[in-house]
Length: 500
Ligand code: CO
Image 1 (cartoon, rainbow, N blue to C red):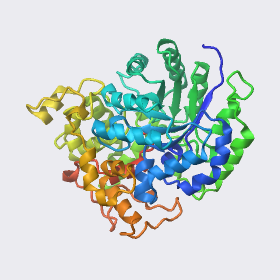
Image 2 (tube, helix red, strand yellow):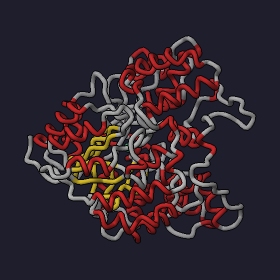
Image 3 (cartoon, helix red, strand yellow):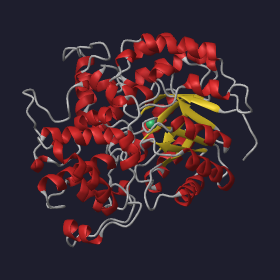
Image 4 (cartoon, rainbow, N blue to C red):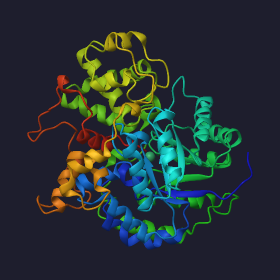
């Protein structure tokens, strides 16, 4: 055990917590009144941007994500602001070329971000290294991430090795990102202890509460010397979100690990989040303990998504078969951690395999691209039979996937010249072309503004991913190709831990 020390708190209420519990629907106007209080707390940092918030701002809230960031920066002058970046996927669902990544990071930092947490679904360093380099170039803190999962390959040694590699690329700290809430308290203790002694960088632990173990994992991690833990204001905590800031601060009060944060101030902040329109309507589905997570080691959100895909096919009775098929598909693919986009790729294929009754008779474009190496290097060996069956004579690429991509920035600027009001617009457009164009049109008055209901009253709560207006299923097996953005956003709700 290392010397006891003050534990830092990163509060996620303005990003991950509402992404996990209320489909990323918290509006800027619901945040602004509490910023002054939050700025007095003395958090290590506030996670306020990135992940699904970028897309949700334009798609659902008629907000410019860049303007949101500037306003948050304005209101939080004394607190470090943090964002989540999906490595080479930036805040989207596919790889983007390096010129776009560099410009995005430059603008994120220029508009107020201090710390960038960079992850890759496959823990493939090549998908993170440019983001790390660009972040440091802009003078921001580059946090390297371990996407935590459990598999025959993913043991403590594996994660220590990834952390060491991250350190060599120049990260300032390491985050253990337990998006499915799988880490047990004793594994957290061991992993943190080894990272501290063998890697020697600050370590931050990010857990979701889904399995009910997160606060115990935090306690043991703190005993092992973790520097920072991620928590959320009480009304936006637990369930699919993080442990409560209020509880964790109270738990360490008076101990050698005392966070030094003022509980009274925190309770005023909780009061605010209690009163915003959506916090008391958090759906039951994302609260409580999901025991399936523990037995299947499949993220809880993914299970509910599989269930809804099956319901649309009137095949709910096959859920158990699908749950058993998921780990087999995952093994065939070399054990990718189940996080966006790999969770969708694996889940959909498991459903298809079970529905057709023959494994891999039909495969999605994503599986093909995954096997081609276009998402990066799978953690383990891919099943050679599957590889042959799908790719025939084609050989997977061995290089960094983004090396295949042409620069996009200059061309895109021309494409949307008529809409550009700020340099950042071109980035919004490249990452979410259709969503951004609609947003720009509304901004110019060419389309009517989005009808904003209160933030809980969203269709997404009740709809499932592929249901058309008649309530009929649109999901056709032949039609399973690309991960369509809208589907993923629905998944962000169902899939509670898409991008952490
Ligand atoms: Co998270």
